[in-house]
Amino acid sequence: MKPLWEIASSLWRFIDQRDQLLIVSLHRIDRPQGLPLSIVEKSLRFLADRYRFVLPDELRHRDVRGKMAMLTVDDGHAEVYSVLYPMIRSLNIRMVVCVTTDFFLRNRWLWFDKVRWILEQPGLDQRLQSYTLPGQTSVFENPRYLSKFFKSLPADTRDELINGLAQHCELNVPTEPSEGFRPVRAHEVQDMLESRAVELASHTVTHPILMNLSDEALEFELRHSKKELEDFSGRRIHSFCYPNGLPGDFDARTMLAVNDAGYGMAFSSIEGVNYKNNLAWDQLKRIHIHRTPHIFKRGISGLTEVIGRLKHL
Ligand SMILES: [Zn+2]
Image (tube, rainbow, N blue to C red; front, side):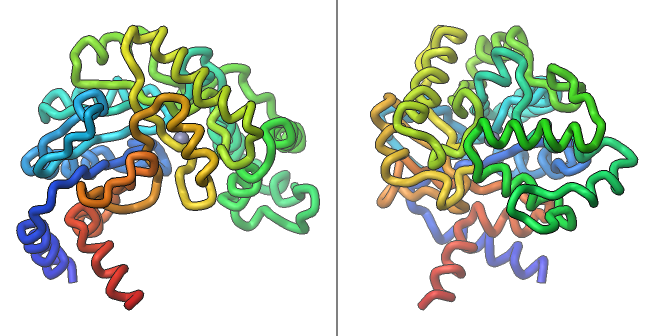
């Protein structure tokens, strides 16, 4: 099926000449659960040959023309500079780094990294099997469930439970993110910003799910992160990236707050291509680089969405 999908995707990309903004997203790369570097490199090279890469600043007047692409990288881990930056420079493309300011500016753990760090410690199987969450019988068959459960909680309860998990496993979590979990450094970001190939976006202060927040806390996460990054970079921050970003992680109230905080665009994690004729700037769709190249090519061509719609007819 692979060659057939490749052919269908390139055919569709050729037929569909609508003005569009393709936003590609990346999280961790080259880590145990991250994407292999070779896949990232190949996917970006494919895009570099076919799309014009833009940054949010260039789109502040919302002028989408032809086939535009934007590369977004979420959270702001160290490999943004050590691995991705040299890659985008050699491909002559640009990227938006979406940073969480407590992590980037104050070197504080991202809460889900802390969970990951705990789960990655060796010899914990027995301890973890006897771990139960309040109101749950057994959670430990599926570690992904653990993060999903934590995601639904207010920050205080969540952090208390994460510390409880560490205690249960008799672990001392390092006070700052350890190697493999550390943020990109300030001078590295300054270096990237000077090249004009990189722009910063806000990804909140503490990476909460916005729906869990009171109006006051929501405003703080949106406005304070924006101000901090503007002070840091001396440039306007035009774009925002929803933590988690899937349906149910943001709604009309949170989108309104994003607009009110002065962001011109916001990235979701909903899969799809943004076409000029129905472009929703406050919930832009993205395509995640997939480890299977023909699935990625089908996604960026827009064919995946077309097939999805046909199935619902
Ligand atoms: Zn994130």
